[in-house]
Image (cartoon, rainbow, N blue to C red; front, side, top):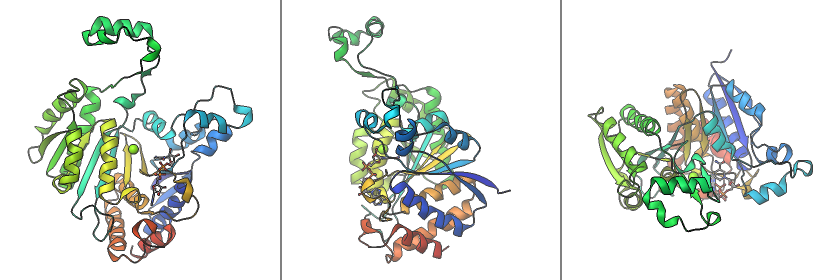
Length: 372
Ligand code: NAI
Ligand code: MG
């Protein structure tokens, strides 16, 4: 029996292209794993009314982790319009499968390393090595939203908070409310993970990125918990920054930062900013990590215009494989893969279009495999 069971979820569009690239590298690495393909994405929404069929979550429950490509999502009306005729009007509602995976498997930590590799012409600077920890299941993305605002919710809010008074006269159908919900445990978990990572990989600072001077309760909770946890890590400095100022500092002095830790929405924003500093979507990898399960994915989407052309940069996916190897505890293999990717980038001979080259995704994967 193989040491690991891994689910492969290529999904839509270039998700399939980069998954083929990943397989070239996984085969060459010789990871002792049994791979099973799972169904996820737009095709299954259109045909079955569910982009994440139950058989897929059941498959995931029998594996150690999953490697995911990308999916296509569309706004509500378009999603409805593309449903198979016999499914229309039956109450099917599209919900992002990746968000559902994060919630169903409690993948509470989103890890996004953003490291500049020498020789990448797309680097903003060559000395950037930032790792973003983003809380993955709470905050403004908890999905607790109201529009129109139910009358009893309005009454309760007005009774409990005098700042709600000025909204009392607004018609209920003209108010939309999205709750930012952050729990102490949620804050502690993401902060703990960020400090453990800093300790393990030798980062000197953890910067908590919030807005506690304005968003006092939720951002405040995060910063207060960060201070408590930081006290347990004497070798690592805690820095505090506001999300708005941080966007500026990340352009001005990105080389000064190490680990960043933040809540879900702010993390979504700064992780895209950080990804662009090191070459953009073709380089940005991520892990969605829980206590017992993890899903690894490049951060790009399905880029429909390039689907099936093997044109896009597979580096994001190959660095995603590296993250998966690290999480599985195969750190030697992870290191070999990172070195091989770095070697191909530095040599600058085999490159996809985004780096100014004409090679295919599979050429790049083969060049990496050749160095393993
Ligand atoms: P996208 O990430 O799919 O592509 C935007 C553009 O970035 C592409 O047209 C391409 O020029 C470039 N790009 C993306 N990946 C690249 C790579 N590996 N190498 C080189 N260039 C690359 O974002 P877009 O166009 O906004 O969304 C397309 C679809 O993907 C939508 O349906 C969207 O909902 C979905 N999406 C899915 C995500 C996921 O699966 N986690 C994340 C983001 C978007
Ligand atoms: Mg995002």
